Length: 354
Ligand code: COI
Image 1 (tube, rainbow, N blue to C red):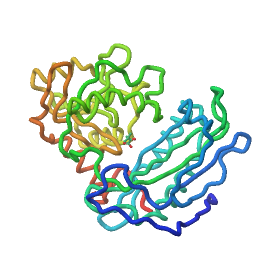
Image 2: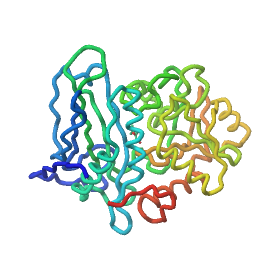
Image 3: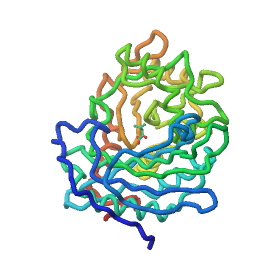
Image 4: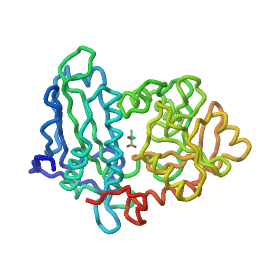
């Protein structure tokens, strides 16, 4: 047991109506904070009222971007219980990102306990309308006051929570995605597989172009040959080609998605062939032309399962499955959300009830 101090807010906020939610606009009443100081380690775990943080303008996060984050969700099940989905996997990944960004490892047990206590304190903030959940954002920032380029000697680990609906305005309806040609998201040996803000900042330019052309997001190709499919800005990507589901293998520049891993396990459990391997955009285009590109979908904590109804590459607009949700995408969505909302048995042991 860790000694986590709890200070309850004296001014609880009004909760938004379910139809107002969207993604990431509202925040619950409390947050978790843990400090790190070189020579002492991580210290002072506390749950406090949600509030702005005060940092010196020289805090290193503002200058060199040393930070990592995670994304996971809490749900209210059909039986009215609060449940977390694979939080242990998120804290493991956070430590892998920490290692890449030279941030000291956190105690995963402490983080899990802190999260459970935080969700329990703000349980009323978990929305209950269909398709809604409490999106949880753990993150770490470098707080040392110094302009030298070196790993910070001070950090803050913070968890905030946001009652949310679907990430895309389309919900579970298919989205349109375009392949980015001019810019790259990540390169081998870079920070692509870490969950760090810089990866998302560097992807904004592609996102801006996609937005302008009426697409929801960018599909990124590899940074070296501009040929192999990597991931979408906020999701991993899957293709169903002639009955086999293919997703790019984790190669060091792709984010190791927890939803991605969950979906691979579900596919295997259902006996659907699934391959993690290099897949070129040419193979996808060829499958489209010969009629074997049956489904395309993205996966992510925020996005859940998002079918892709149109994929644009160069001047070609490929309509996937007549712009409708495919059978496998629907099955994966039903299975994942069924487990998350306690409608079907969690035979994978992924959920933690509070
Ligand atoms: C998530 O799915 O949790 C993510 O981190 C994607 C995000 C950048 C919205």
